[in-house]
Image (cartoon, rainbow, N blue to C red; front, side, top):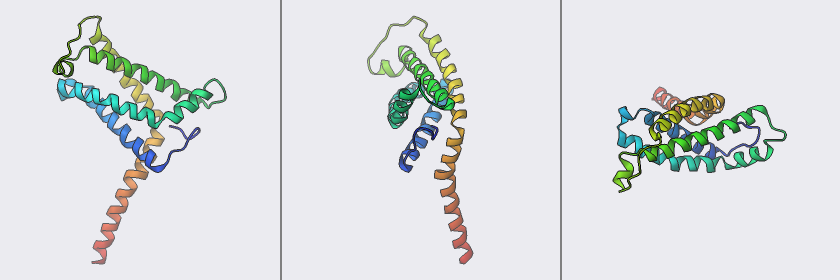
Length: 172
């Protein structure tokens, strides 16, 4: 998210970072069900639904603020992010619905059999590929936030740990 509309507390920023990283990794793993296996693909995809709900709740203030200001005075980057996020939401919904409709492992294990047809597999494949493209654009637009947040909450603390260990070794 850009800083134009809101700033986050340190703990919320860390939560967003780890949550976004988990979603990103899960999406990459699920993009190749032949490598992870169909069961992992389906169950991991279903778990992403809950994670995405948390993601939306963590960003709810931004969503509300941008929605209110969308037709008024709003910076171009926020407008692009807002549209891109809606496209990601719509595409993610298509991925999930079509994925549920073609489930071969998770739903049958729960005793649920859905009718086949309507080109669900094609819709699932197409929306997943579009999702990969949209996720790439989303990541690129948020790259400065990603890099600075990783630096602040991962790289700098690791550097301090190794620096303090090195200082302790030098004093011995």
